[in-house]
Image 1 (tube, one colour):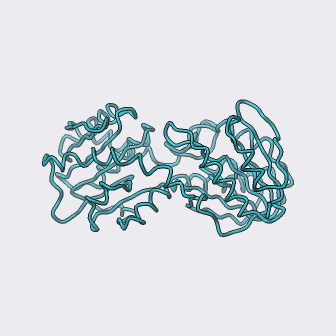
Image 2 (image 1 turned 180 degrees about the vertical axis):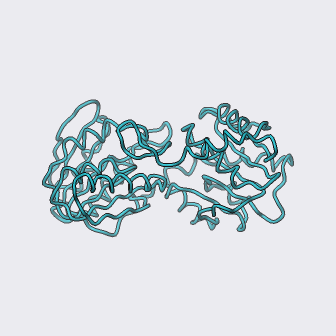
Image 3 (image 1 turned 45 degrees about the horizontal axis):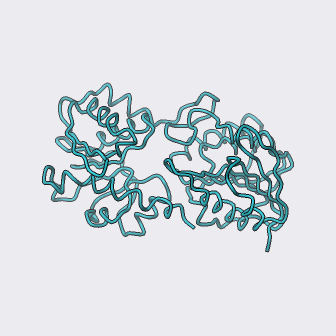
Length: 355
């Protein structure tokens, strides 16, 4: 089961709206195909419109894999690359979106146009106002309850705003003292569920251990602090932007606790499975995207964790108390116990893999 399947239907309306200025003839595609698409998404309209000389950048592994599966060009944009058109789908988190607007402008050649689209229910007017603050003025159209807005690189660019917004994506320490960056899950704090799991992790975890859905590395850092018998620690995270702050946090944890471990960082969708095998796995799995709960996502994490564990391996999991994971855990583990229920969350251990 892949995360990509949970998201396929959400992108069609926003893609159709994004391309509206070109469909209506208000804007024209560059003849040489010099188009950059930041946070690109796969979809029927995308496959209709995109050319092989475009460059699509996407940091979320399932979305990147969906683009590749459709034969669309995916990669990282070079720092000095410039384009005539930069398309983007801004995220909800405002600092993250502002950094993305600044990045779009950085890669825009003189006179080029940046085009963005946001669903009305996800802050479209605020996002448009931010792009206008950067460029001086923008135009807009609406379709499918989405707003597409665009502006051109010109002498009216607010360079002070541009420089300050460009810096927003750099790793920074959050209120708890961990390196993070805007837009990551609970980026500005330690979320309650992860803190609960960390507080109840046993100190006898040993051997090779993995963190499934590691985000900026909080749980992995606590494993280093608490579990002196581990020899290797692997962090799996589907959002590539989390890996740099995670690396900084792990390096700090090893310095703080005088540990030297073999550490692996993997940009990976764990619901597709992992190749390595582990003595223990910890996880605070995602259970929603946008506004919809998707418990199948957590079930997929559990199933793949069981497949990745040694026969007597242990899974330590935290979840919202209302999520029905117990049956899935019982299907995959000989022994399942609820360790604690607190603050709306539950910590569960699964031990001994079935079959």
